[in-house]
Amino acid sequence: MERVTLRIPEQQIDEVEQMVERGKFPNRSEAIRSAVREMIDEHTDKTGAKSWAKV
Image (cartoon, rainbow, N blue to C red; front, side):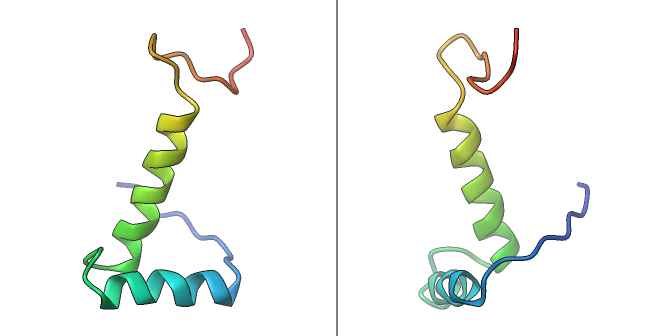
């Protein structure tokens, strides 16, 4: 797995931390990975084509 560094507003990190504390995710990294997976799923049609990809 590759490491990615990014900046996120403190309020959003606080919300992620709250989800971790409530047990929705085991840690912040998994919460962020889950969000990325959801974003990719939202932008992928049934054929597997990415909606943002240029053809």
